[in-house]
Amino acid sequence: MVNNLLGDRPLVIDDEPALAQVIGRIAAACGFEVQVTQDPSVFTNAARLWHPSVILLDLNMPGTDGIQLLRMLAADKCAASIVLNSGADDRVLDAALRLGRERGLHMREALPKPMRADSLRERLTALRRTQKLTMSDDLAVALAEGQLFLEYQPKFDCRLAGITGAEALVRWQHPTRGIVAPEEFILLAEEDGSIRGLTNQVIAEAAKQIQAKTREQSADHATALAAVQSLRDSGKLDEAHLAEFARGGKFDETAVALSLICGLSIGLVERALAQNESERIIVLAKAAGMSWETTKAILLLQLGTRGGSTHELDRCFATFVRLKPETARKAVEYFRLRARAVIPPAN
Image (cartoon, rainbow, N blue to C red; front, side):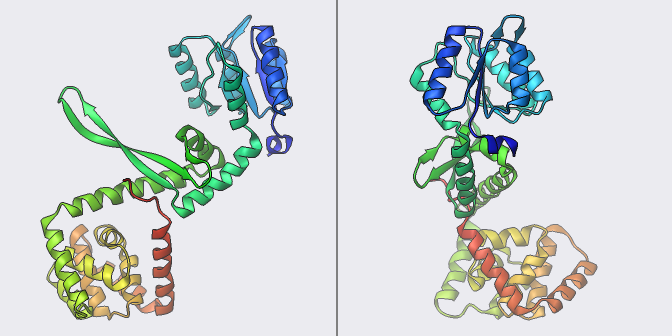
């Protein structure tokens, strides 16, 4: 919080005095309040007392090294964004980045020497605290409004000479900035505490897309979908048909029918049936004005997919009796709104 109030303050330590002064002048010209030093003790005091927002750190220092300074910053729980500006080779830079991140530091992409003045300006501008605060607000909106999307990177197994899976990669389509690089918003999410929500949303969406793809390739599901949609289109889809599907153990038909009656996605209903979400099934049935007998038939189908007990069914009945239809309808409307605000599927 203190750092937020103090604004944009780069702290630079470099073993080349002339280069350090150039970095300082460029930072000042960009409107930053900057401190430059070659002395590790001066750097340590400034890091602790001056509260920099950005630290540009050379790994090769006389009398010490950048790794020792990173350990000191980690021990002090330094909140600054840290950029390694060094002539060290890529392996050393990667090792230093890993060490800093493992110790909880906000390590940014390194800026290898020799560096260009325009590259330094761009990096400093991107690390402005005021911009980060705005981007943090934008990220909260992105999570709520579905501006994030997934792309998939194949995983190739050289021993098998084939693709064995895929890695889901999250992307952000910002309404004014276009595509925002993951290294910008993932670190931002870690800093502002939204990383857990982002991770959960990505996992849920990847699972939903896998589920949808599997469903598309299932002949049984296609047949069930066509049959139930035909009932709906002819105006014959009702509670009686749904109860008949459930009592007959027809999972696909039950899921499709319940989704169409409630106006929700098939995936959401399928997950409720396949997982431990009896309460959600009760909410959907109550909102649609269904009887307990129909609700029980759906729950028995659900219990059959994952195991259950009569005691659990008794508990569900008590919940069904207590739940008011108006409350259930409000919950279903929330499900609909939430479904519109998730990550859109990959193209």
